[in-house]
Image (cartoon, rainbow, N blue to C red; front, side, top):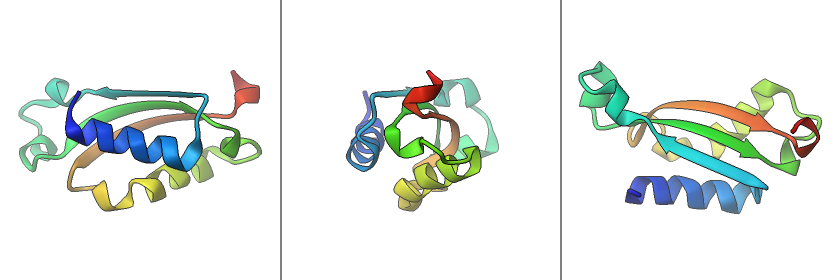
Amino acid sequence: MSTRMDTIRARLMETFTPLECQLEDESALHAGHAGAASGGGHFRLRIISTQFEKQSRINRHRLVYDCLDDMMHKEIHALAITALAPSEV
């Protein structure tokens, strides 16, 4: 696992105390893509947290983006998010 993934996962764990946090690096699937040339990775996230209860999908995504804000567009080029509340699982 890369240091970048370790950092992302650590921030998510600290911020959301998730019941589940699956983070996948899909950067290899995007080789040659313009965003990949800048060094930013492509990631897929599935996260389940009580903090997402009664939050809209947009608000959940905003919370995740806020958590990783300084990494966005530098170390993270693309992030596909599935953010769920425990009641939705």
